[in-house]
Length: 506
Image 1 (cartoon, rainbow, N blue to C red):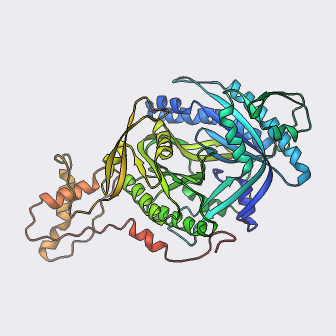
Image 2 (image 1 turned 90 degrees about the vertical axis):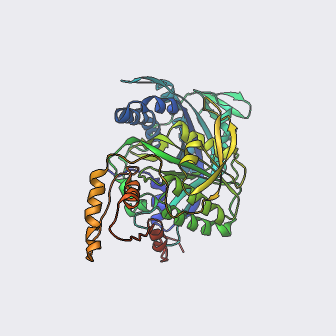
Image 3 (image 1 turned 180 degrees about the horizontal axis):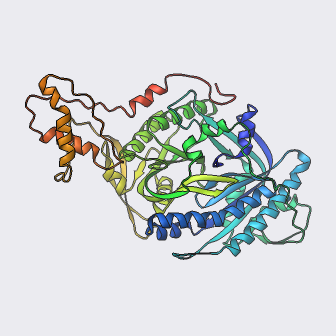
């Protein structure tokens, strides 16, 4: 099964050679609460907890997403505990119909959220609530892409949905209470069938539908267009993954451009973004905005999910400093490192790969609080940063955290040293040290020693083993060793070619 991580709407248009566009119709913003306490509770149960969490996410999201597609819409994107749906009108005459279907779908989604307010699992019962916001108008979409081939399976494109209709739907969110469905007055004016509404400040509360519209799409979900286009946005290993979800140690970075990119600079910035993403082994989850008052673009990135290394923190900070240096507008970032649920969220028809957890949310709170040009990190990230310097920036109170959190500012790269210091004594590796000794012994007999590969999971102590061997072994003659760090240099070499990636790219 291929995970549907990119809207079929976009894949279809990319197959036609389109990389941006505008449509008229309606937007529905669904905001759900309850996933963070669920994630924290199930983390204690390891793999079983991850399985239960994946099942709960599916139980909550699948009916919502199926309802959107049944009424002619599609999921434009996710935003943490929320999702955004677009109901396009192919013609001006069809605009009223698409808005009416959006209202019918919104009411059905609100009913589902009210009935799914409690999810019972073998680890307890968990409460959920949600609100649904509907607006109408123009929607813009755009594809950001690299300007040439990168490392194999590297992400080379991302999509962005925006425009007045999505902005208006998100701006309704603070006006709605949990369990409510709210509309803009313009939506009600474009719907022919009678609606039961109550006036609110700046919006209308939908209290019922006298004549809900029937569904228009009950087809099985299929991947539209050329399936290889989906691999431009997400690596094939992820698209074909059989792991629904797991708990992983993840470095999360929210990066916010504090202003809109000039049109002439957008393509160059996108090319730099994807080049650095490949160079530093990051994963771009989404491009969007944090709330309706976000003046620029916000990027959600992960290191440690879907794959990780023992250098995730340094790679994340290296990416951020290099992107900051190349950005034509000021950027700010929030970074945390902690255990999180990493997996697929949504339904077979449409999903997102993302991470859930209180420290993922903390990174989002950090970026909002940071000033332009600042990179805020939590204590775990500051401690794990080997190659970067940080300074304490006081303690701050963030929504969703029980206590004030220490914050650190990233100030730059640390001067490299010839050797790396380790605390304490290494234990339990005598056999491996002896094997290394046997491997290099021919060198001192003037023979070729061959090559030794040390393999192991991230954090198992591969570097420590080699360090201890070189520092403590009594060699029979003088030894000179070299450290040739290649993992990031190779990725720079991959970016030297320049060929179009997507239809319409230059």
